Amino acid sequence: MRLISFLSFIILFFSCQPPSEISQKTNHINWQQVKGGTCVDYDFINKNNDKVIIIEFWSTSCGPCIEAMHHLKELKAKFGDELQIVCVSIEPINRINAFISDNNFPFDFIYDKDRSLSKVFPHNAIPYSILIDKNGQIHANTIPGYITNEIITELINGGKPHLPVIECKTKSDEIAKSTKINKALVSFELRNSNVADRQMKMEMLDVKVPKQIINGWQGNALVDTFQIINSCTITKATILTLYQYAFANLTKARFIFDEELNYINSFSPLNLYNIDFSCSNFAGDYRKILLGQLNAAFNLKISINEKDVVFYKLIKISEKDCVIKEGYEAFDVKGSSSVSFKEFIVNKNCTAAELVSLIENQLLYVSQNGEYINEPNRAIRYPVVTDLSGKYTINTSIKSDKANVDDWLKLYAKNGLHLIKTRGKIAFVKIEKDKKS
Image (tube, rainbow, N blue to C red; front, side):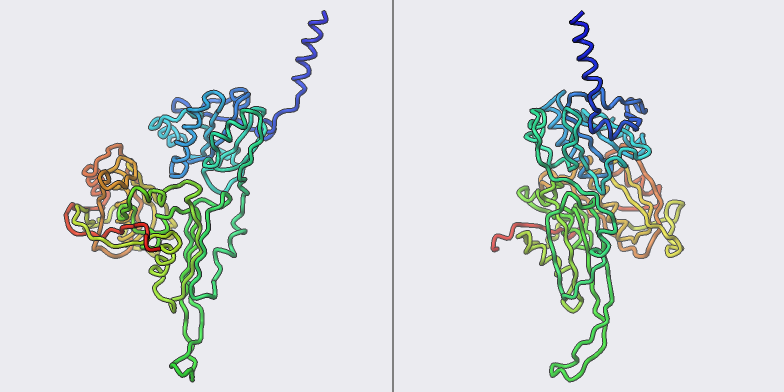
């Protein structure tokens, strides 16, 4: 009788324990797991009881997210059943399911259709990680790069690790900074990206500022003129991305650097940077001055090398349902684009030069089967050029599992984009360490 009373007391004691922090935050959510091509109910609390949990917000089009997943996969391999990784996306189920099918990540994938989880854990950028201990207490809102073996071990052992915390900022917090006109002829501010910064973005501004200049060296006359100030704000960018911008958004395929400089294309949190740069036309060429600032800041130097290579030339753009040249100005299409080794989706207004840049990026993925390979002995680069000018409204969506450049050329042609294969000299940018500094 006493034994029964004692057991009843134990059951009553544990049933009266307050719910965990994560349970309180998510008890109203109907978790839906993407499994076997469809959605099924997911009992988040009971399935992950007594485990360290990482809730990971991500998307299939986010390069840093995919890189982070490989890091999380290594953590899962090390800690096994003691660690559970739950990946949350708001993308359509078919895209999530295709990603699951094409990859081998030992995670549970959740479809956050109505953004319920995103509302519980608001964030400005992805990847974004919620770290939860075995008792359901939330320890950090951070990014996956900061979650290490040591952090997980400490949580498993009941510790309380300290991690950088992301604060969710609103757009109004950044308006003044993004529209600021600096009075200096040249202003360059470089800093490490903060975990609270929004996902990688670029904002450019060209402003005419009235100014009086002295006419003649004796200074006996003032002339009214305009000073043109070009400025940019770039956040969460790799070093290579900054150089791409300085070269008028030249594609990755046109940059060459040794293996020791692979960090310039790394999405690791320690290798992401923010810059605020503005330059008056009185000081000189905007992009040349930016290149000089980047070289000095990162102790690098650049040189332009011409190479005799195979390349593709866009010779004709046919007007079809997906390509409209007339009435460019009449269409207010802010637009979007997505290119990979499986898809070429463009829905935007663009120049011929912008279009060949998108094609070149896509052929880079195709030729390297979805990777970006920089090693000279492995890299396959197919530059794309054009003599065409003008502006186009492009609304095309091509998807194919064929990782073959020739097949993709045929698909482009069916959609009004005609390219030919040729050979000649193309300029490449070589990035090296500046050993003189």
